Image (cartoon, rainbow over all chains, first blue to last red):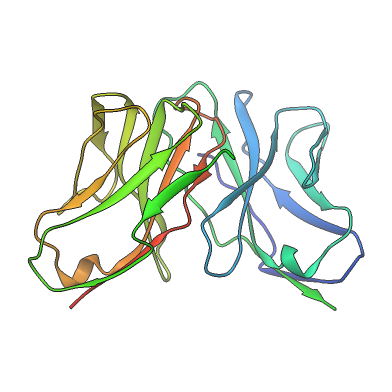
Length: 112
Length: 113
């Protein structure tokens, strides 16, 4: 998987929007942008993914830059349950076995 | 509810005593995988399965075995556990291999003394 760069940590107040950035300047045309998160003492959890267009689901929104070299995960109203480490990963949909490789991710703290 | 289940969630055992960690998914996924997670090392893949009766080694397969006799189940077998296999283990599944999103089980914390 191509390399991504994320801030080590971010902080947000409860019920405010959170924008988690990710840079992926070496992304290839067949790489999807995936986001996962891992809450304390839990298994990793799929959040959202996209290729070129912005995506929305019940958990979050994904905004993808026009040149695809960066993306932003948006949590519209952070809750205490959203405190987790968030990982941005590029995955080639055409590849075979592609184990998930989590980098350091961004540790999100949510303040009540 | 669509989910991946693992059992047991916690296990303390002694060196050399064979054990099996079960993994089951109810989403009819073809691809299943086992990871271990250790502090500072992140997730590392142990074994994976592209479909029934098709399994292959991941990055850290030594000391582990797997089988995939049914689509829904993918047990992880430690024939002779050693202390360096003390870790947090996750099973995951996805619709197919490749870039599909993966769904993880809750984890099994294994301690080998």
